[in-house]
Image 1 (cartoon, protein in one colour):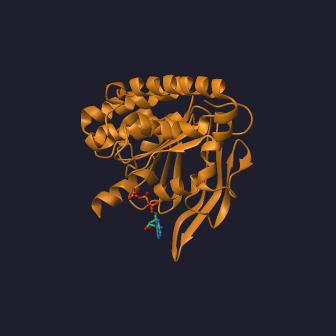
Image 2: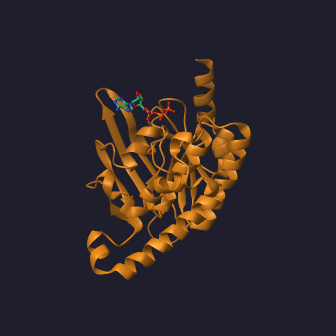
Image 3: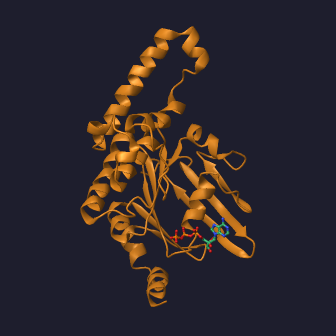
Length: 260
Ligand SMILES: Nc1ncnc2c1ncn2[C@@H]1O[C@H](COP(=O)(O)OP(=O)(O)OP(=O)(O)O)[C@@H](O)[C@H]1O
C-alpha cells in the first residue's frame, strides 16, 4: 500500500563484497507499509545476503538502509525488533526443549514494556500486561493452527509446524516489516497453498509489510503486490508480478540456471 512520505524500508545503493565476490552490487529498493514484496533470483543471486544486511547480521561495504527515513546502518541485529523488523530463518531456530507457547513468548518479550524493575514496582500493571500478552499469543497461535499444541514441546513437531511456530514468534514482536526467508522450503503442495493464504491473512490482520524471499515462483507471483528480481548481486527487474515474470532478463536468468 503506497503512502505519502517515506517508505517503510529503503535500500540505497547497497554493496557488499566477500573477498573478490560482489554479493550485492548497488542494490536499491523500497518497501511500503503493508506491502508484500517478493524477492526472487537464481541460486547465488544475493537474496540471503540482502536479508542478512537488512537484519544487520552482515555489514554492507557501501550504501545505506533506512527505516521510515532513518538510517539503521549503525545498529546491530539486536536493535532490529525495536525498529519493527522481524524475520524467520531458512534453517529454523527454535528452542527444542521448551513449549510452542514459550517459544512464541520469546518473540513477544521485547514488545512488553515491563522489565524486572517494573515487575517489582508495579505488579498490577505487569500482571495485566502479561495477561494481554498471553491473549495476544493465543490469538496468534489459533490463527496459525497452533493453539492445540501450545503446551507441547518443539522436539515433537514436524517441519511444517516448526515453520508456523517461527512465523508466530516473529509476529509476536509486533513487527512493521516481516521478512520471510524461504517459508515454502520443504513444504508439500497443500502446505504451500495454506501458506499463500496465511501470508495475505497475516498482512491484513497485523498490518505488516512482508519481504518474501522464495524459490517457489508460483507462490511469490500469487501472493506479492510487487516483485524484485536479482541475479549476480544486481537488481534486474522491479514491478508487478506479471511484469517481472515476463521480463527478458528474468527469463534469461532462470533459463540460464536450468540450462547449467
Ligand atoms: N558469508 C559469506 N562469505 C563469502 N561469500 C558469501 C557469504 N555469503 C554469501 N556469499 C556469496 O555471495 C553470493 C550470494 O549468495 P546468497 O546466499 O546471498 O545468494 P542467494 O540468492 O540467497 O542464493 P540461494 O537461493 O542459493 O540461497 C554467493 O556468491 C555466495 O557464495
